[in-house]
Amino acid sequence: MTRSSFAGELQSVSDHIADLSRADLQVMLRRAALVIRNTAGMELGPRVEDSLASIAGEMAVPKSDLIETIIGDWLIANAYLPVPCGLDDESATDGSA
Image (cartoon, rainbow, N blue to C red; front, side, top):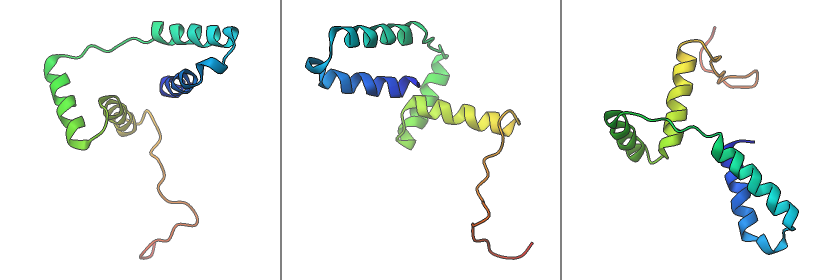
């Protein structure tokens, strides 16, 4: 389970907290504590932080999504991840091969 999906689940649970049993609430809180404990923040220099914040603002995306995109693109460019295939057998193409 990703951090964002878990955060969404916590938000949903908080909207219906009266419907939860004590045991279910205890499990959710323990999982939240583990997620928080195992989350290591990344400290970036002020120049990098400012640049990322500026670009994220221009693109209207959260900084964490921007960082994920940058890292993913770098991994693809350096052959650590496969290049996503944009065409499949049923895609229309122009021209001839």
